Image (tube, rainbow, N blue to C red; front, side, top):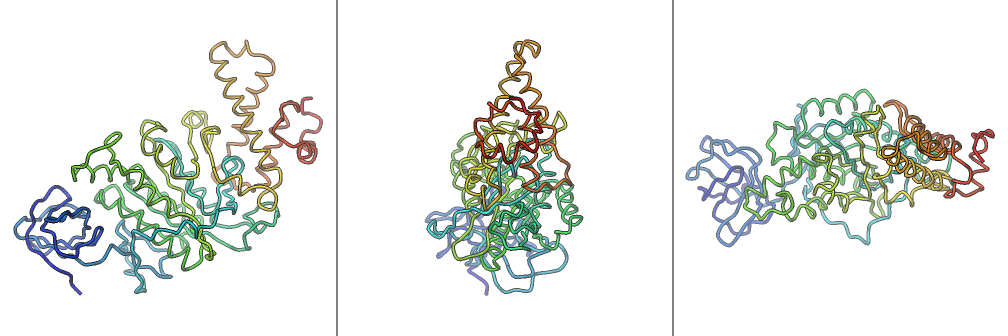
Length: 480
């Protein structure tokens, strides 16, 4: 059924048009705009007053005439068609199929803006996800239902890392807890992730890299792709992640699946938000971004999690490239406040040939403490991780000192820590893109490296774990 239609526009300002306000128009309502040639393009209501309504068009204003264009208010929010046929499909940023197979066979539609989750209904995330990457599993553990962004920079291998996580976290190990060394965790055998991949403003070759990787690894049939590439209208980037998260909510809470959502690049999303804010004449905040950047990002990030009574979950890995590698930039700064940690990629490690170049000290997983230990990963996990952090922090201090006084002036103990740092980076952090380490392998490797430190320096490890796990690796070689 057609909605109320009006002829004529008051103003045309880039992708935003202004018309006389109709009665019963709602914020975020979908609008169809017709030009002189009867061409149809969609938009949504972004602002209104008693006398006018501002409409954001998903496209250009080419062909629009202030006198002859028509506006049809459709009386509904933007919706995504959902159903079992979602998996394996490719959509554009507006949720329209672009893979040539037409609409999915379903009449169900969901509001892309989502519904707020009652905080009381949220289940606390506790289930360990094995990514197969030691720097993450061992020291910055990802938990099912968590939102853990990757903070990267231009030219760093964040896409390779995200693809590896998808590839290796998509298949749950036979141990019952994603390969957690037979620890008897919380997962049922055979559980799998389905992946929602959302691209915003990225180049075609980057999107092709992900699609080819999904196909080679055999997970493409369990992937739903939303592509808003660099040549698509920039305003489409504001809708793409909402469509992706709507699909994730349907699969997680109505189909009871575990969903891993990868969104790249959140910086492009924020740039589109700044563009719209500028067109609307809003007062800018830090670096020109709107003052509501925090709440807007929160409306995306907070759609991750688990709900009591549902066996499904949504885990988010947003990727954002920090302008000039500045972690204090508004985008990573505000994202850090909302999310439960971050994986920070280090340019210096990349230059030294370390992959994945996960920075040891700035990286953090705030939910790690509740998803590791006996019954989830292994009893010694917390102690090993804490000791590795402490030792690597000492390495950083010694390197700073060596840059001032020279390495030859360091004490024997400091030189030993320098050697420890090299071994830690080359053996623990470094691993191939096809190397999938179980959590047991990661922790055992941590013990092998810690065995090179003086026994009296292992202050963060329970002595019973040293006797149980380190002695077989130390072989008497640990310094005493």
